[in-house]
Structures are given as structure tokens and as C-alpha cells.
Image 1 (cartoon, rainbow, N blue to C red):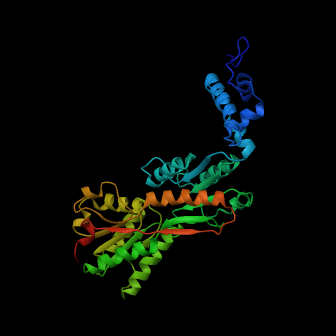
Image 2 (spheres, rainbow, N blue to C red):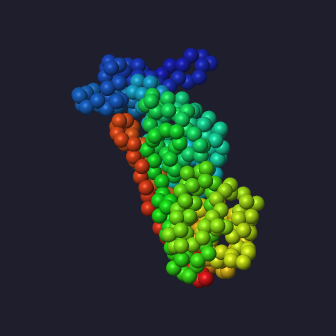
Image 3 (spheres, rainbow, N blue to C red):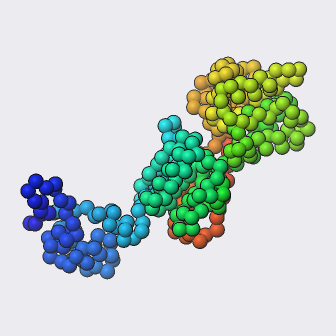
Amino acid sequence: MSRARRGNGERPRRPTMVDVAREAGVALRTVSRVVNNDPTVGPEYVTKVQAAIAALNYRPDERARQLRTGVTGTIGAAVRRIAEVNPALAAIERTARDSGLALLAASTDFDEARERDILISMCRQRLDGIIVEPFGENHGYLQPELEAGMPLVAMDRPMSGISVDCVMSDNASGIGMAFHHLHQHGHRRIAYIGDSERVFSGRERAAAFRAALRAHGEAVEGLVHPGEITAERVAAALDTALRGADPATALVTGNLDTTLTVLRHLGPQAASRLAVVGFDEVPLADLLQPALTVIAQETSKIGQTAVELLRARIADPGRPVQTVIVPVTLKVRGSGEVRA
């Protein structure tokens, strides 16, 4: 039985197709056809080649296959935060794995320059496609990559400056649901604190809240507070909304980070004196007193759909660009049911 040779003092050499062909006593082309599952190869040759592969512990060179086929079997995911629990990323990995794809993930850390560097690097690695949880305000620099055939899918919000498939939550419906729920419980002065309107989801949610106020004949002045999510800015917004002659009796928060910042500022008993509905599920929400009512996003569904959109784009690059809106759900737990 032959083995891959090595010279004195040299590192062990991995067996190659040439070694397999020699071991099996067949042509190199026959080995290649067996490795690539060519159905036209006779069963006697398949048996010989597979026996040689097992004897030599041969593993196909993925780099060579990638160069030959132009397919890496790997997709990328550039998300805003990996360090914390990320159900969407978990769903991406699970769905990719079930589809026979490996995943290369990176965290952009809410940094536009870092996001650009990561995406350009992923494009240069010629991955089969990339899922992006966008943060930057202009992704036009990726247009040449799109034109060169790189499949891209946006998750959670669209990418600006380019037209790509996108999957995201129903922002407007969720905010409308939260407002209507509080209104039904007797609240008329309902405030909103959320993300900056330079962010697509922040812009959509703030606009939906203003529309809900107007639809119910309520004043907008002093109740809508989008902006950067910092302790100082959120504290100032709360002070404006909750002080004065006609303070808000209820609050809608625009995302998880805003909800957590509000709770840190007001304390865990905040919802006992102020009705609160948060947009996005909050870890340990049921441990608060009362437990936190939220508009829950189907983040796992979003991640799964992102992979499905990417696979469809890889299979058919010319298909029309598609946006998938995933419904949200009101989860009633107590904080949104504090009556005015």
C-alpha cells in the first residue's frame, strides 16, 4: 500500500489525487470524477477510488475546488453585535448549516468604517454571498461588487445607496399596535423614546408613532423623542415627557437598547407607576414588577429568511429584488396594562 511521501526533515505531505490514482490504479481524471460525484463513473471504479481514499485518508483540497468551480460553500454575515445574544445570527448559522453552507461572521460594532472594512474584506474572499445587518448610511461602495455578481441580502433594515433583497420586521404595525394597546387602557399622553432617525428603523418607528398620535387626535409636541441612545439623551427625553403640567402617563420605547436605558434610569419598579411597552423582546422581562409588555420581533424568522433570500439570489442572480416584511407580536405581561 503506497503512502504520500515526505523527504527528510520535511513536514508530512497531505495525500493528493495523484496519490489516490496511483493507489487505485486508475487515471487521475477518474479520481476527479468520483470525488465530484459524477454519476457516469462505473461502480467498479467508484469502489476502487473510495477504497484508495479511505486507505490514504485523503481529503479533497477545498481551495482547488473553489478555484475550479467559483463556489466556496461559505456565506458571510456582518452583524452589528456578536458579543450579546443574537437570535438572528443563530438562525442564520442553523439555516446555513442545514443547507450545507459554512458561515463566516463578523461584528461591525455599530461602526460605519469597520462595517465597510469587513464587507470589502468578505467580498475579496469571494464568499458565495453576504448577509448584512446594516449600520452605515451609504453602501454605494458595494455597487461594483453587486455588478460583479456578489449576492447581498440586508437584514433588519435596507442598505442605502444600493438595491438588494431585504428582510425586516413590520416597524409601523408594531408601533401602531403598542400605541393602540396603551390608548385602550385609558392613556392619552403617550410618549415615545427611540433610536436616531438617521437609522432606517428609528425613522420608521418615530414616523409611525407620530401618525398614531395624529390619528387619535393627540398632540405631538413634547411626546416624540428620537435620537442617539445614550444615558444622558434618554434621561433628558424622559424629563421632558414626564415633567410639566401635562406629563405622559405611558411610554413606548423604540428598541431594546432604549428600553434597557429607560429601565436603568427609572429603576426596575418604573412600570408600576408608568405604563411601558417596549419594541423588541427584553431578556428577563418577566422578572420585572410588573413584567414588561413588548412588541416582539421574530428574529429567528428574520435570520432564516435572510439565508433563504441569499440562496435564492445565488441560484438566480437575475430575479427581481424582494423585500420580506415579518409580522411582530404584542406580548402582554403587565407593564402595558397599567391604567391611566
